[in-house]
Image (cartoon, rainbow over all chains, first blue to last red; front, side, top):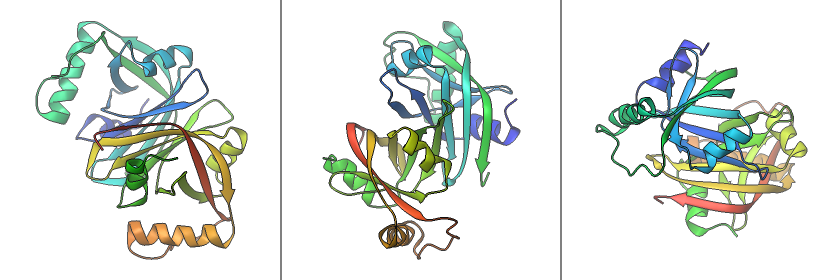
Length: 130
Length: 130
């Protein structure tokens, strides 16, 4: 289960996440992303052609660190495993919901391949100053 | 060499970095940190007893992603290798300089072991909206 304070941080407001994944070449990719959560998972929405999505098929151990938009000293680090991915209309609708939350309008960028929701089950959760 | 716009982002203003390292257990540690740079390296200042420092002795491949304090859509990702570490008075003075920059006063927290500057030579640099 995701700690309630971390679920709150991830699913409300314009708080951003850094999504760290293991690339096959031994490097870490670490990108700024929108973020969401349900009771059990941190949720990241990406597209299936992206290196970060290919990377989690190679190694599902990922780390998402979410900070408060107005205070980077307040943050939560979730180390976990990608246990599920959801494509199709649900992922398409989810990126619109995220865009509404962060930008105030539906997702306007070109979709190059297919949106996918990445569900991350926490193995270790830690927060500071939440 | 570090790209000038990335050096600028890392060494001026109150821009924070996410410091991603490979832990020996296969997880990624991903923490919010102060950051600095010289012409050749991204610089992170930590202490020698911390897991993140032990981690880079195990695997020197790290990723530092720095975002603009007032705009997280503007960020730089530097994937690189820890090529040098500096302890002693230089590292102690450097954390005071970082504290002056971010907090407006010398470093006030207890030093538990010893400060160390971690020098990261970029292998790949990428920025968005800088």
